[in-house]
Image (tube, rainbow, N blue to C red):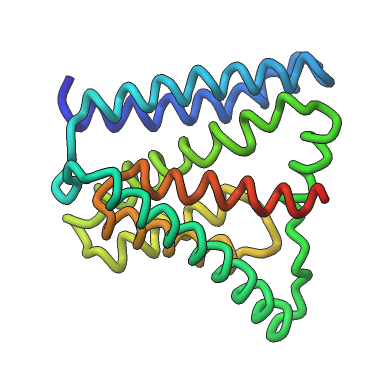
Length: 208
């Protein structure tokens, strides 16, 4: 499979997963059956996307990195993401009077409380898939026809739009930060690890 086809099927897998919720709603499937199906679908999609990443091989700036290198960047990526999220959230509220409470996060919390197994999707599958799509498919492939800065801005904007949250600037900032972590660490699983841990910490604090 060529690199272009690999990237296409990676994106297609993500689109099919996003379409699953619409299909279930159209069929009037709700409640535990809905969320269990979405969770299982996300697990399958994540596995497929990880397999496709492995099959595609490294892109132009990815490299084989050491465990120590990866752990250092995961820690830095997580701390930076949390600090940036709260800093931009505060500025957003100060300048534009936008609530610091994320409607997206609140919605996810309600679902996780009602259907605990859904945390597999929210805390594990979603961040891995988002990093593969928005950083490896969009950001990495947009660098050559544009440049690293424009590629980061476009992928971050798409990342923010996808979340459909009032805190648009926060999600743009997160997208830019994870693009930076991915580009500098040269490993998509480093940015995915940072994203995953950040989600887990933020949601755990919110649940408390």
